[in-house]
Length: 116
Image 1 (cartoon, rainbow, N blue to C red):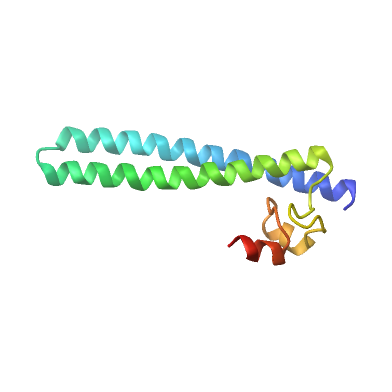
Image 2: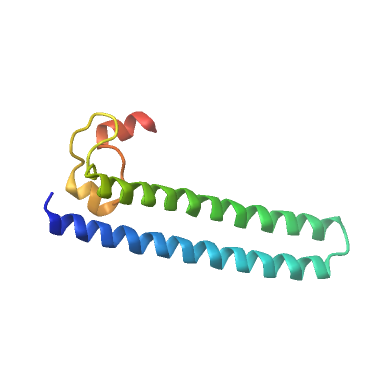
């Protein structure tokens, strides 16, 4: 992979990291607002269940974004270490088409299948 390609992936990964962070913050803000609104209106166990459901839904979405951001940050670390684009299992190069689609990919297709 050329230096220019690495810089392109690095830029894309940094952008993804910022997007995920912004989405996390937005969801946390929305969750706080909706929870506060629901608690103000809460009068019975059905309302309390709606609050819990809402909190759980947002928590799940936030957790997924955190996990994606961790993968993105790990990919940025691999760029800095000179190991970006290499499968963590077998060490072979990850296909560039795969990296174009999933720039934080950790494994080649064969090894990814083993992890799923």
